Amino acid sequence: MISVLVVDDSVVVRRLITDALGDDPEIRVVGTAPNGKVALTKIEQLRPDLVTLDIEMPIMDGLQTMRAIRAKYARLPVIMFSTLTAAGATATLDALSAGASDYVTKPANVGSVAESIRSVREQIIPRIHALCGGRRSALAPPLRPGLAPGRPLPGTAHTNAAPTLTRPGGTPLPGVVRPPNVPPGGPATAPIRTMPRTGGVECVAIGCSTGGPDALTAVVRALPASLPVPVVVVQHMPPVFTKMFADRLDRTAALTVVEAAGDMAVRPGTVYIAPGDFHLEVHRRGTEVVTKLNTGPPENFCRPAVDVLFRSVARTYGGGTLAIVLTGMGQDGKRGAEQLRSAGAEIVAQDEATSVVWGMPGAVAQAGLAHAVLPLGEIANHLISRTAGGRGAKSMEVTR
Picture 1 (cartoon, rainbow, N blue to C red):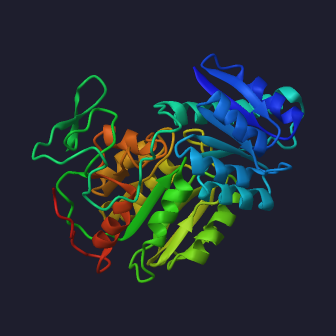
Picture 2 (picture 1 turned 90 degrees about the horizontal axis):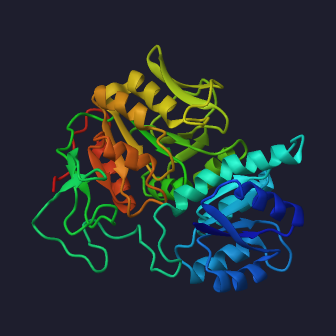
C-alpha cells in the first residue's frame, strides 16, 4: 500500500485529490494539510511514501515547503500541483529545480466534478506508481547523480568480474553486462557498455519525461557552444511549460535553446525542444533539414512523443544519429529506438541509479537496444566525445 499526504490550501482540491486516489486499491491517503508548515509536521508524524503539494498556499507556499522537505527527506517523492499558466509554469520549474519529483496540472475548464476527478486520476495515479514502485525510506541517503565516472557508490567496490545483466527472473539481457556487486534492481557502480560505434554523428536526439527537466538541464549545460551538431528533444510537458523551460535553459546554457516551431532549419549548436501538445519531427528539404510539427494522435498517451521524434530522426539521419533516453516513466522511445538501432544509430540510456524513474531508459536497456547505459554525470562527456569534429567524427570512447 502506497501512503500519500495531500497538501493544498483549498478544501475542495484536497477532497478532489483524495477522491481521485481513492479509486486505486493500492493507494491510501493518510492525511491532508492546508499549508506547508502543517505538512512538514504531518510528514514527520505520518511518514508518507509520497506527498502531493500545491504551489500557492498561505503561511508557507509550495516552493518553500519543497526546499524544506528536501533539506530533511532527500528521497521522499513529491508531485507538484500546478496551474496551466505562465506563472504556474515558472513556479513549477522552480519547484522541480528545488527537488520536486514531478508535477501535474490542475483541471481547467472542465464541466463537472466527475470530469475533474477523472483528469486528476489519469494524471497522478500512474506517476505515483512509477515514483513509488521501488520504495525506499524517505530518510535513506540520496543516490547521487554527480559521481565521477567510474567511481563506485558508497558501500560498493569494483571487481574484475562482469556478471551478465538479466531481466527479472534471471534471463540475460542481450548485449549488456551488469556492473560488479550489483544485485538486480540495485544501483549501478559502473557504466554498462557494448563495443562502441565508430560512425560519424550528425544529430543528437534526446527523449525524457519524469525527472527529465533536471536531467536534461544537467546534460545541456555541460555542452559547449561549439557543439558541431544539432540537438532535438522531446520532454513530456504541456503547452506553456515547454516554452518557459526552453527560455530558462537558453539563459543558462552555452548552446542556443529554443522551443521548436514548424519549418525551422536545424542548425549545429542549437537545441530544439518539442512544444507541448505537438509532435516534433525532422525532415530533409533540399540540402537542409527542417522541423515539422503535427497534432497527430498521442502515442504512449503522449504528445509530443519520443517515438515520433525518433522515427523521423531514423529516416532523416539514419546511422548518423546519437539517441539518448533519459529518466522517465513508461516506454515512450522504445519503439523509435528499435528503428534507430535498425538504421545503424547509436543509443544511450541513463542508468537506473541516477534516474528518477527508470521506465523509458529501462525499457530501452532491457530490450537490448542500448549501446551504453551510463550515469547521468557521464552522458554529456560521452556526447561531446562522439560529436567531436562534427560529421564523420570517430568514437573516442574506451570500452570497459
